[in-house]
Length: 143
Image (cartoon, rainbow, N blue to C red; front, side):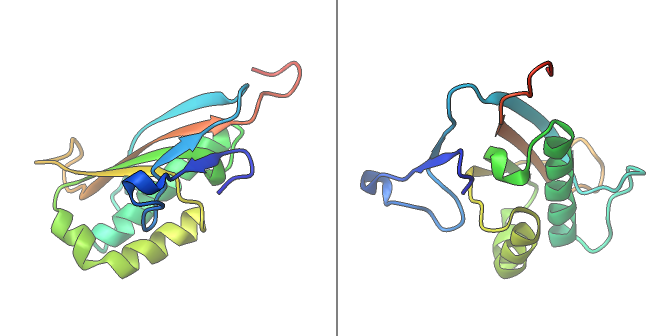
């Protein structure tokens, strides 16, 4: 967890989840970044090969790239929502999913939701990830 973000995991909801936090408090003065849904494609907008897990990792990398471009780090992500076309793919590859997640986000576990959807806008996409990040205040004279 970022030194700036504080996890909220009360015992009434079972404490900390496995791989996520139940809530996140961002400090006053944070800049809020809303990252639109990112799919698992490369800089040429070609979906990566290999199916669900490689697409998930690429989508997470794309989220991290947007956060960095805005002046933050992956540890500034307060919330992730994963939209999957087949939650069975997610569950079947849980070990690989966790490894892919840790390669991008390390041991930072924001508030997270997983939603199974009928389909995604990008043909062939198996997963889409959107995020909210609480960035540090802008440097003096910055945005």
